[in-house]
Image 1 (cartoon, rainbow, N blue to C red):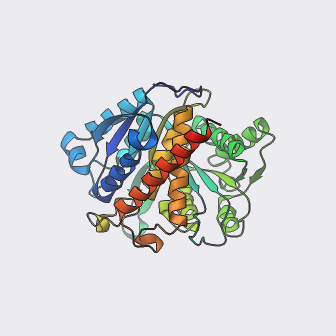
Image 2: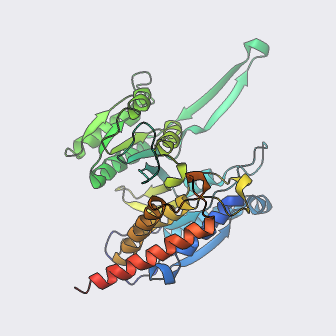
Image 3: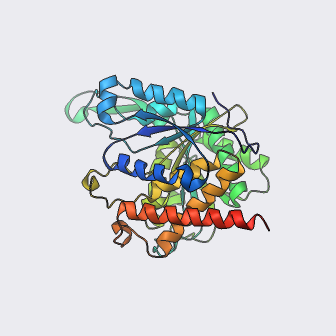
Length: 370
């Protein structure tokens, strides 16, 4: 697997595995790719494309998903569109489970942040990052039923492993240290000291490794309640897979829109350094919006910006900052799609972001000469 170096490299072209999707998900991926063109960000990226549309996943019996995963293991980088998960039993299912398993993804990072001009819920102001376990727990659990009628009983066997718990805890504290946030929340370890307690043990151990990071453990139910009244501090919340799935949706919506954040899947080496990263929007394929040019491309654009931060070179870092700033500024200054109370089209929003990115990079390049 390719290791993502943290050394500053300026002349090495990166290869990004692009995973095409379905419906509006694919349309928004196309918008994000427009922002990553060399005439916008100032350098070239190689794109290796795989068709993960539902039609092609069925046609290849998911082999195309495995191919994309192997490519990500080789290059270290992936950009994925939203895809359809068929409801019928025995179909190809979601590609995400395959991708996470094959690149050994341990953590999903989603950060809710204030969008200027968009009213948050419950006064949420400072960023809140949910560090969710990417594998195990309720997802992929063995399920079965026994008995009949009103005596029928359903069972489910879940599992978590210490390596994944340690990855979640370690990344949470590193991310909190990097973003000057506190580690907050946690699992329901009082009710489940053996199962959920494993993550709490790793959180406690990580807090000793990072003594300068503020640590405020809470049970998951208290975490939900306190989030609605804790608006001032930047927070990083480690969570089990199922808890993190629910929690991240709520956190993103607290800031006014799920479109204002990206979703990042991370795989690590033995020292928990990033080895593979796949970014996507946290929302679905929005079939009702397909072909109408009104969907909000913000999350996919921010996903592309987050991917650039993992290139670990100066040009990429500057381009990432420019995309983040341009996207937030556009919304702040009234360039908004219908979901945020505006009237611009999908392509018009992207055009505006591209113009702002170009201007910022031009200005910053000029200022470097002083």
